[in-house]
Amino acid sequence: MEEEALLPHLFRTEYRKMVSVLCYLFGIKHLEIAEDIVSDTFLSATELWGMDKPPENPTAWLYTVAKNKTKNYLKRNALFEQKLAKEITYTANEADEIEIDLSEKNINDSQLAMMFTVCNPCISVEAQVALALNLLCGFGIQEIADAFLTNKEVVYKRISRAKEKLKSANIKIAQPSISAIDERLESVLTTLYLLFNGGYYSVSQNTTLRKDLCAEAMRLTYLLVENEQTNTPAVNALLALMCFHSSRFDARLTDNGEIILYEDQDETRWNSALIEKGTYFLNQAATGNRVSKYHLEAGIAYWHTHKEDTNEKWENILQLYNQLLQIEYSPIAALNRTFALSKANGKKTAIREAEKLKLTDNHFYYSLLGSLYINLDSAQALQHFQTAFKLANSIADKATIRKNIDWLITEKTVANNK
Image (cartoon, rainbow, N blue to C red):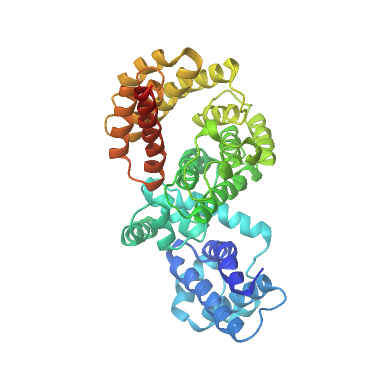
């Protein structure tokens, strides 16, 4: 790896681990201290490595410096020692003997504990997602703002308020108990689901950032799978869903960042290894007697990894959407079901169902209607696409809709000239 890219890469991969371990040690009340120590470690690396070459093992160097800075802090800060005496059961004079455990097992344990701490119901879902991105994934305030198309002041306030709520509620960072898992696992899965969707469906033009969001969501979900207590069917179903979606990531956009619709995607650009992993986790999810929304969405995503346009495929997708809407209704899921309905039962049936939704403020609604009216009523199709274009916000969405408008206008011109 090039030297100029080494530190940013290590910041993304190691910052989150070291902060989690130190938070696990210090407690949530001293979160800022943990962040300061780790940030100062990376500042030292920037200064020293800028004057000389990075060490042979830069990760080990960072861990060693972080440990030393932690011990120095404990030795010189009596007030901190007094506050933590009951919690971490040692005195400042013993700081030299303290082992700051940065083993892979303790890192994983720390991040699992942090995940359940961050996803406490005392803070909003939006704050949980932002805090998870910041503490567990190492994303900066500006990166989070870019990913969710908001400004950094909003993100900063959201994270700050979330931290204060966790502190004031005196939330303990500990391995989740069975009762905590039962109580919070759904919130954890919701946060990871939203985190993944923030990357996969983001309209941000930063493709690297979008992939990183998805990768982080998958990494954290895999931590749950690896832990015996949190390795539930729903967790496996969510990881399967992420694998199936990620398998088509590179086929969804052109080199210019324009959206490639599913029917036009190059199947050779799909990642077969991720499809295989998704199938494995979906099979692992097929236990117990409860079907979650993640099972159903993973099933839908599984069928989308079969490019062939068969009746079996679309009938299965349609039935999965029917079950999903019964479990958790959402207008977008209902809209997506209508597309499957058009494939299974024809466009006229789908149009009748789509028009019942009346999602008149949604550009996807009009785009779908435009697509359904193609070859049935070109004037109606054009009108719907034009409405969709007005409602769309992103450059990528507008570009896709514009292609349909231009094609319909061209077809109309050709027909009139015959």
